[in-house]
Image (cartoon, rainbow over all chains, first blue to last red; front, side, top):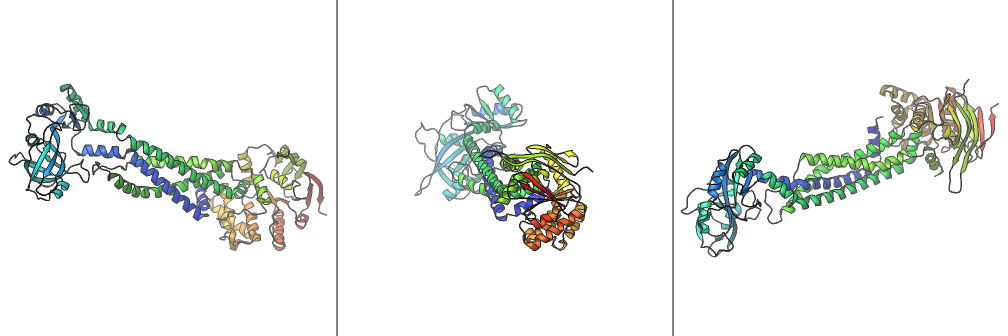
Amino acid sequence: MRALIFAVRSLVRQPGRTALGIIGIAAVGALLFDMLLLSRGLVVSFRDLLDSVGFDVRVTATDSPLPGGIRLTDATGAAAQIARLPGVAEAVPMRTATGEVWQTGRPVIGLTLTGMDPGARRPWTLITGADLGPSLAPPELVVNQSLMDEVGGAIGSEVTLRTGCDSSRAALAPRTFRIVGIAQFPFDDEAQHTAVMTRTALREACGDDKDEADMLMVASSGGAGAAVAAIRAARPDLVPVTNEQIVARMQTQGFTYFRQISAVLSTITLLFGFLLITVLLTVSVNQRLAEIAALRALGFSRGRAAADVLLQGAMLVGAGGILALPLGFALSLWLDQILKAMPGIPASMHFFVFEPRALVLHAALLVTTALLASAYPMWLVARLPIATTLRNEVVG
Amino acid sequence: MEPLIEARSLGKVFPMGGGPVHALRDISVQIAAGEYLTIRGPSGCGKSTLLHILGCVDTPSSGTLRFDGRDVSALPDHARSDLRLRSIGFVFQRFFLLPMLTAAENVDVPQAEAGVSRADRKRRTAELLDYVGLGHRAGHRPSQLSGGEAQRVAIARALANRPRLLLADEPTGELDRANGEHIAELLDRVQADGTTVVVVTHDAALAERAARRLVMRDGLIEREEHAR
């Protein structure tokens, strides 16, 4: 009889205990799997989000890659100069501001405004209507669905908008804009109101004549690294960063909490798994001491008897580990929904993201746990004194 | 003729809290191939300890043990396991059949461990179950067998790898008189078919069936009896 069948029969002999053990390991495995998905989920999701925008380099005036800091001056000239560099396909200036939609008899609606020069690439996806055109009479707006729903108008309708461009300035007079399309903006959260207009329209709305931008969005043609090198050489006064560099920075700063939480909870989860398997196997071995001693007397070697325990541990963990995957997936979807409800989280970002490496790591950690957890019961079996055990059984 | 087993000055000391316990003291015995030997004596006299040492499941504290001319008293564990697997069969008072396996599977286990092919195992298992009169119970689990039947399966299991020596520790200890008689007859037959049989027992009737009988007391062989 093969060792595997022998181990299976030994487990099936106590179906209740085996089933509870497998369920316990599945629960532990599901939590472990989720912690592994969480450990890199935000990083992977954030990288995907940046890449989905279509630009792989951001150029700013300072080393902050986020809008809202010191602006670039002569943005149009800088964009044109960078666009001519080798390895650069396109450079588009982008400026951000805040705004308020004013409607008679209705509450003011706050929104995030972006001004962007027309280019081949745009960091939004048009859902319906038309994209931005050059018209300034009245200037055009593309809004997200959330804002459209709140305004209650239709494509082609006009809205009155007051922009907030600098906190130091007095409030500007409201202006009229025409909504020409509805788009999806990748960094929007579920409740965010967003609109985009041309940078010229935003400058006019802001009432200034400065050619400024928060950043230049750059698409490389020969790799982000080469584009960054070319920009640094041409414009040492500017700070170009690749998406990968932004992700790396977030990984060591903003997202480090999740990695730490994940590491702590993974360790605790593995410890519980270790204890569960050790207790199950040790109880099983202790109940079968006389039987194991008899098998040893019949000629089973120490290694063979210990391998039987290891196989049982491996099968418990294998079955529990496989069950843990669908359980972990379901749990991660639920937890993701809960965490995404936090304000300011882009709707297309996820905390739990599947990667093949998570699956490999999950399996490796469970196998290691099974090996470590089986060590003590295997040692009990290997060191079992045959004659004493048989004698004690008869006396008992 | 060289004996199958030759024990010289065997001693066994168990270190205990209250001081060492001398379970065996200077035991010397020779057992010829094909012989039927019983060992009896009061509880604690050392007969099971002697059986365990003869069966290589325990090692002596002093003295030597030769099995088929080879010194086995200081063999490493894996070598003793292999010797037990291929040359020694054990029958226990409490049978120790594996409850999750059928009678046939229990007989199959030591053969599979010894690397016997599936076809040969199947043939040998059927042959042995017929030999002990349980061919019709091959698919039954130990819980579905009577005590006598379980012990007969245990004897079939002990004979699975054609051992030269069969050791039985109180094989009728858990059985009623009728079943004990069946087991005694079966052991007679095993010996008659050429296997050396050594039985430890309290049962005087069972002990009387052997041609040679050792009586132990306080770790010593008190006397040796021979059938007339």
